[in-house]
Length: 286
Ligand code: PAF
Image (cartoon, rainbow, N blue to C red; front, side, top):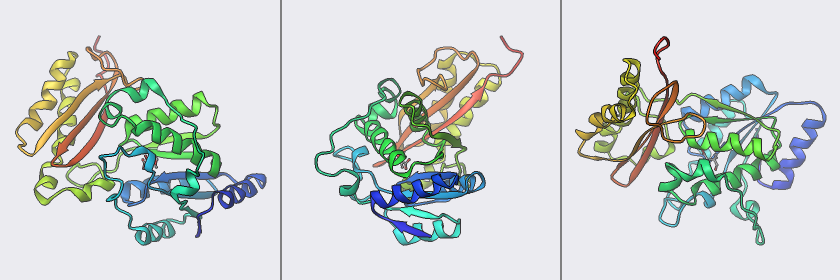
């Protein structure tokens, strides 16, 4: 496995392979890799001849009061996981290589970024959109993989690729969960032992919402109250949002007519966790 730090070397490597007809898969990450990333890497490995993983803690997607400085950076462990999984290149650019002095372009996807995570973290999605656009330009992949855990991010990336004709196929893979249902996330390490015990309430609330829909509830306020009932007994949990949305636009719905996405965000102390579940209304019901 090669480690590439320079933007120019990364592009030269990819361009050389593209000329030979080699397909390039790409998993962009901020490191602190876990089994969710491993699943993305394995899915890419099955579909592409060559595989690049980027490890870059992107400063532009963190707000001033967020955890950029203390974001976990276990780089040796990350490289080892990549090596085990047969990754060809770990792309590890510095912040100054990605954002040299004079870099001024902004990329925004206004409607998708406006709600939910975008409201809680106002600069976050502009930072994600910018870095993903740049990484695609540098790595030049045929296929890029994202986890469903960051549902809104995946929707934004799909829109971005379509609007800017970036020519990268986007694949979104299911969320990988701990045995108690908690979605794997690099931020789970911040949870205290008590918060970790309370954290699966997030997924349980989504399951309660799905159960309400499966049993025929179409009124979104009833679905939301089924979700809220699960978390209200957890004293450590504060709800940011429990939403029932259109799976493509992420606009909130008032009635469940077909497929929806349940989106939720909770706070446990200083840790903010997000999760989601897509749910189809039972067939035969009108
Ligand atoms: O999901 C992430 O880890 C990041 O938002 C991404 C896509 C690597 C961009 O920095």
